[in-house]
Each structure stands twice: as structure tokens, then as C-alpha cells.
Image 1 (cartoon, helix red, strand yellow):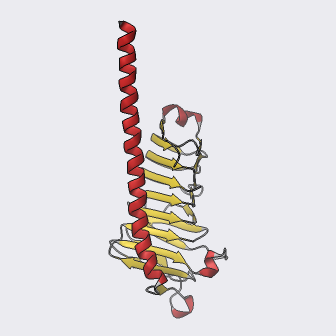
Image 2 (cartoon, rainbow, N blue to C red):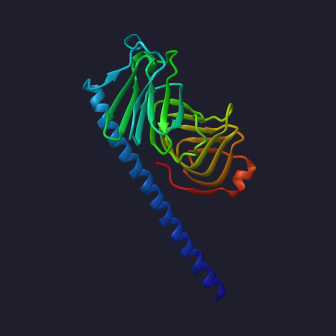
Image 3 (cartoon, rainbow, N blue to C red):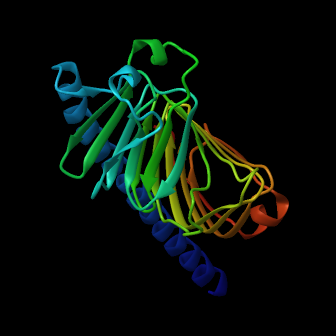
Length: 245
């Protein structure tokens, strides 16, 4: 009788866990679909020629920035080696050649012209809002500390993209950061990177921790993904597994 009750309890826990994983997977798919729809709409404007190109020769004041107040959603496409820091307002440096930007409401698309997209020497410098939702597609970026010590709460989506959170020079701090990586993406937290709560969803992607510090760690991953955590973080991390997509 006792074994029967225990088995029943275990079965109920399995059912709850399966439902929880299904909800996590559904939320992950819904988020990707929503961000993809926004990205496609903005990219259509780019293909139709409805955009502005930065050209350093057109500006007497080099190094100045174009600001985009009240932008909450940022898509970055085909930009290799970009440096990103956080501030109150989105900004693009004017002397970065070959950068295309398109704004629609509170959405901003930042894309590279062919010379940059093919792996040129330009390394754009971008500033994003502390709590922005960022979508990286076919890009590689290095997140670095801005001028303020404010701990932001960004949401970062990656598809076929690489992101390094680097506190090598000055500490990089976050409150609650949520990262959703898919399509062979890679995420690395370097030394002097801190987060009160890291929430990570991986689909055929990888995550690496090279000396960072986290408070809470929540991870949802599939069997095609790879996770490398320090032992002290691995012990306290809450990890759930979902089927590969």
C-alpha cells in the first residue's frame, strides 16, 4: 500500500514536470515567433530602401551619436564584432561606416551594409537601453559596461549569433537578465560579469562561464546544447530539459 502511494506521488510529479516543460517550450516558441515577426517587418523596410545610411564624410562632427529615445526593442542583423554597452537611450555612433538603421515606433533595426557584413574591419559601437529586448541575428557582439553602474534587466534573443558579456576592464552588472539562444548560437560570461538572476533558454546552442558571478540561475536546455558552468554555479542551478526542436 505504501509503495502504491509513493508511485502515485512520483507519477503526479512527472505529470507536473512534463506540463511545466511544455509551458516553457511554448513560451520559448511564442517569443521567437513574436521577435521574428517584428524583425521581418523591419527588414522588409530595409529591402524596400526605406532606411538611413551613416556616412562619416557627411558629418562634420565625428564621433557624435544619433539617439533613439523611447526605443524598447532592438534587432541587430549581420554585424560582426560589435561593441555594445547600456545607457538610458539607444544610440548609434555616426562615424561607423556602413551602418543602416530603421526605426518604427519603439522598435529599432540596426543592420550592416555589405562591406561590414562580409567581415570588414569596422567594429560598430552601439548603446542600448538598460532594459531593452535585443534580437541578435547572424552577428557577434561584446557586451561591456557603460558609463553608469546601473544594473539593467535586458532580454537577449540570439539566432546563429555569438555574445560575450565582458567585464575584463570594468565590472559588468545585471539585475535579472534573460537569454534565449537558438540556431547554433553561443553565449559566454567572462570574468567580472555579475547577475542577480540569470535565466537561460538554449536550443542547439552553448553557454560558457569563465569566472562570472550569479545569484540565481535558471536554465532550460535541449540535448543538443552544451553548458559549461563553474562547479559552485552548477550546484545551485535549476536545470530543466526540453526535447530538441
